[in-house]
Image 1 (cartoon, rainbow, N blue to C red):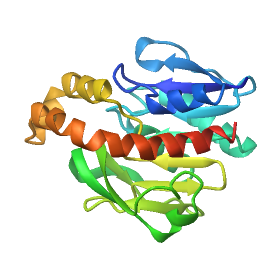
Image 2 (tube, rainbow, N blue to C red; image 1 turned 180 degrees about the horizontal axis):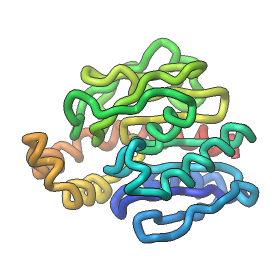
Image 3 (tube, rainbow, N blue to C red; image 1 turned 90 degrees about the vertical axis):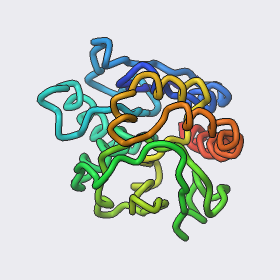
Image 4 (cartoon, rainbow, N blue to C red; image 1 turned 120 degrees about the vertical axis):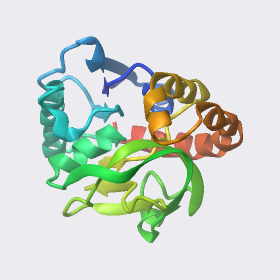
Length: 232
């Protein structure tokens, strides 16, 4: 049995279906809740993989959230040692930053259920090769990033050129949320009402569409995260 380290930044943004896939593969999770003051480990020596989840903070807010510096050091360690690495939303932004790419606020926040299109490169990607060329995904981000040098871009949306990328053979950044369950979506709607109001969105409308979009997203996520777990 291998152990996967999960860095969690806010209560509702858990590992979700990533955790399900890791458990189904016979491995365990060690969750560090940075928002609750739990210290970020200094080393990855005792774990087989690293998962960095989402959150409302930005890569450029490390003075306000100093634990992000510790997380970046772990991401750099994982890249150097070629350990399996998965960054979701903020996690993908931290990975992009660690690889030297620019991360910045986008023109507008992308929140809710929006279409995602895979690039041709996804056809041979370990995680996304089994996914439809286009599907509806869950989004909740304000920041965007450039494609890091040496990375392979995998997906886009109408608003965002780079929704997913792979670096090497074991590191992925997913700006969109493929890991969510219905309780997670509800938790995010409840936790971030100001973001919804600022974007002119209704949380109840997002929740109302969850039942129709989640079954397809679950199938895609189950396949993708099971593939990632084979690397542990």
